[in-house]
Image (cartoon, rainbow, N blue to C red):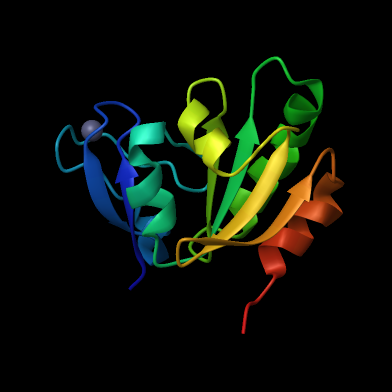
Length: 144
Ligand SMILES: [Zn+2]
């Protein structure tokens, strides 16, 4: 059962969430609010390592900013990937202004910057308004 450490969006407590059971609507052990994992999950810098790097399933990270037009344009497509791939991979969003250290670590200069992480490493990236095809390509990559 692939588990991912997700911070509750309400109380920020980290929970080990079994994503293969996403249809059962897992709840936060601390506050009882549900995890909404059929849509992109916002990840804060302090949880990046546990949620993204230690995930047992592939993670698509959208490095974005609220002031970035192409990021806003890509958001509904990212939502679609999160919905159709729920349980197979995790889709997260990282606000580069709120997470400057993470953005710097990966040398992100141009956004939107999409990266597929597997076992703590970036295995593929897509930069710019790559469209749904670009995201699907990122989502369907299988590393061997
Ligand atoms: Zn909670």
